[in-house]
Image 1: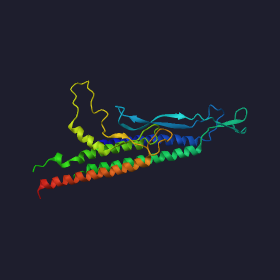
Image 2 (image 1 turned 180 degrees about the vertical axis):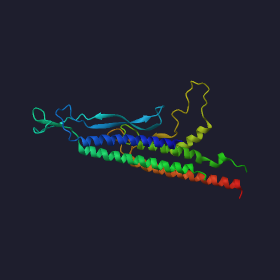
Image 3 (image 1 turned 30 degrees about the vertical axis):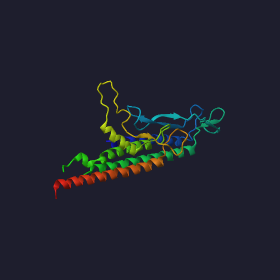
Image 4 (image 1 turned 60 degrees about the horizontal axis):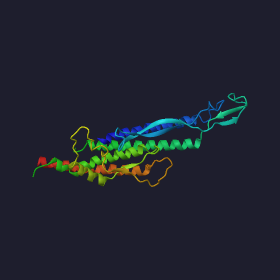
Length: 136
Length: 132
């Protein structure tokens, strides 16, 4: 029964979107984590999604998975704060180059996608319940 | 007049199966709404129903184990790519969530229509068997 596959498909999408929300939360939380050098600074993380292909690898596929998490290559922002205990010899601290606007947009997109998958799962559930009472 | 269960359900059984498959395809589109390079797909219901009816009559028979199964790749008849309203989204993804959602709702209603037809056929059979 192919309706059961939908739960797997929507479920995989929900977990993928959860990973996305997690990375966004981590990025926003670390937006102000400064470090003493360019190399130690926090880098924004973003998940990369890919489709799960079935064994035949052509016609059908089932859901989505997180292929990996990439770190942003954006250069850190150097701030002159000699009073900061993390400052280097020249008085600079390094803050991660995270765009809060981008992260907030990402968060909204992830939560909307999550919601639409929940809706699909709910609708499928009601269809299955009706199918089970067929002929009664 | 003999009661035939196969004839009683008629096209609705095949239609119900196809609609379940279509729901799966659209659910997969929605699941991959944020996947780069994913191409949205859908089932052409009319074509699929025609193919499903014709396949039943002429299925290729495998006479040797090294023959390729003719059903591979045609598991879902009538499956093809959707033409997006907005051709370039920047990441090669052609899923338009609002369209997929309406298609899914439409398909769910059609599924329930098929269920209603089947239900009334079953009720008809039951009343014929009871003879009341």
